[in-house]
Image (cartoon, rainbow, N blue to C red; front, side):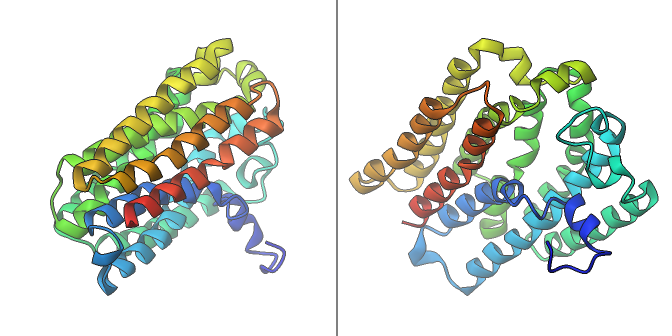
Length: 288
């Protein structure tokens, strides 16, 4: 961040370039899907690697766009929360007009990438846009914004498969559903950082819904996630090696739950961020 020109730093902060975990979590289901749809590393020709690169750029741009939309919606609430009051829109570093202009630029980048994909992938990409716009409102009306985030964030699992095959089959649907449960779990862990501030601001979350039962219920959604994702992978190719390798992300989820202290903000953030490694383990398994 410090290497950027001073005028660009507020926009980099606005799209959370200093916090790459967000675009990693958006990207990884797409990478699972592309690798699995290609039949593993042996099917990864130049076109598939280009797709992986395009999804990387698209994830950074669209995660940034989602952050801008979120901050435009929440700029008044963000002023009331200690962790978010310094955000560019809440603090006034970036005006609302500038925020909308920047959002337009990020959406243009995302659209250029999307329009280079297959017909079915393009349709799916445009279908998720209303969900991106609606997500910031969910925390005002339901204790399940994490579910809505999962529905939105994991569309890349469907788009990735469609980009390779121009169709959708059972495997990407299972990846998508597994990703939704995964998102509910890790975002509940994340939301435990802000539970006191959320109560004061009138914001809802599964962290507040689950309360002291959060660890047990996160275990349940993580279990659903790993079952669905494992079935998706094994539906494409099943052998003893894959079954053995799937134990690695299972152990990682077990480590998360064992290590998580829901009353410790720093610990919750660290466990949340560790989900990048869970996702990358699954990328490796899909490639193999």
